[in-house]
Amino acid sequence: MSLDVIVIGSGIGGLTAGALLARYGKAVLVCESHAIAGGAAHSFHRRGFEFDSGPSFYCGLGKQRPSLNPLRQVLDVLGESIEVVPYDPMGHYHFPEGTFPVYSNAERYREAVAEITPTGARELERFEKRLLPLYEALRDVPTIALRADWQLISVLLGRYFPSLLKMLPQLGVIQGSVGDVMDKEVHDSWVRRLIDLECFLLSGLKAHGTIAPEVAFMLGERTRAGVEYPVGGSGAIVDALVRGLKRWGGELRLNAHVEQILVEAGKAVGVRLRQGEIIKAPVVISNATIWDTYNTLLLKEDLPPSYRESSLKTPAVESFMHLHLGIRAEGLENLTGHHVVVHDANKDITQPGNTCMISIPSVWDASLAPEGHHVVHAYTLEPYEGWHRDEGYEEKKKTRSQPLFKALERVIPDIRDRIVLELIGTPLTHSHYLRRYQGTYGPAIAAGKGMFPGSQTPISGLYRVGDSTMPGIGVPAVAASGILCANTLVTPQQTLELLEDLGKN
Image (cartoon, rainbow, N blue to C red):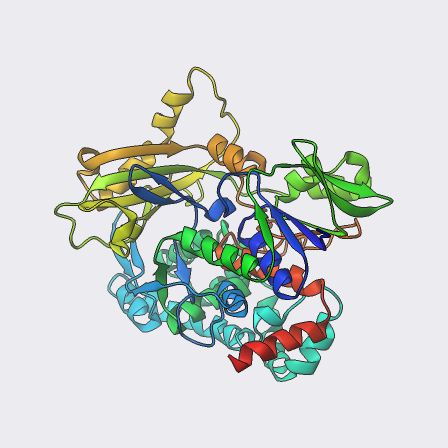
């Protein structure tokens, strides 16, 4: 079989790019090192429990149209769908001074804030009103229509000129950080901490490091579309993308570890697998991180020295400690599914162990756990440095996971007595199974401190997708990276025809 495209890695970015290119009629092969597709979004089974390995919060995947979620747009194009369960409140934030319900509806959200700080709630409303016009401008330009080269200009001017005009008054906000807006509108210390926390959950950075369009889009979408959980967990999303890839003629090979991207005369020509097999194609798309792509998959001489050096200096988001539990559910009938616990108000929210995220998805989808049980996924930032698989590894896992257990006790006080299955993941776990540099979740490029590298590389025919190419550490961002890359490899007319076909269905 003659291939047009090889995709390295079956994370959401790789699957999105591969499936969309297959939809365009390209002969696509996705090579996945692991035995399971999905990358950081894969699901895994243990003793009747189904666990999400990474993302747990979703918005805009349901039936409401138009959907502004890039992933939902791709699934529509592929002719795939997933079942979702909507819910509100989204969850609870547990601060040292008390617990706060978080609603997707903006008015209810501010009412909850007003019970703590009425002045802060008014400031929060001004903050939102400063950002939401940006959302209104951005929502008119669907991600599925965009590309990552100069031809984007003609696409925007030709089809979305009125939307561009709406963006002009927002240029100052677009180019700034959320922190810039917060400094102008919010002085209440509690609300400032709340905004920092929401930015951290979204991008891995606090408000001054997070770009304004990212939060504007989040605020607008969760009010408009609400939040929901995919039935079957994140694995259901991966399965839908794989079905779409195969439906349009693409192929997925599991246990196919790419050892090297082959480059000849400055052009990507294919890949070599660990077993020695060589597969040729004129286009290679890497869903590996920027560090793994440039330091491991390519030879040193394949890249211009200064470009390689500066790329490898890209700052990285820390890795995480993960705790996956199966627990007995009796007496937990009123349990909600999402929780964020901040242990110490005097410590930075980005300090490892201080902010803990908790997801209990069996609250919405009982099929994820045996009858009478729940699945629990808790995680917190954890540096890669200092971790070694030595005689002290197991003891260190137990010690470093204690902030997660402590956080869970804020939600379920007798959690330790309920455990029937316990799995602890470290940065080494993440690095090993997902083949990710130091177990990272992508670049930590603060707003105004540099641009994300994007999908283009100096090597002709070599492109990149995933969380090393777009701001944000969530599913929409990596799905968007796959869309932009795929559309760049076809003509604007082909994308237009695809959009017209979508509009007829």
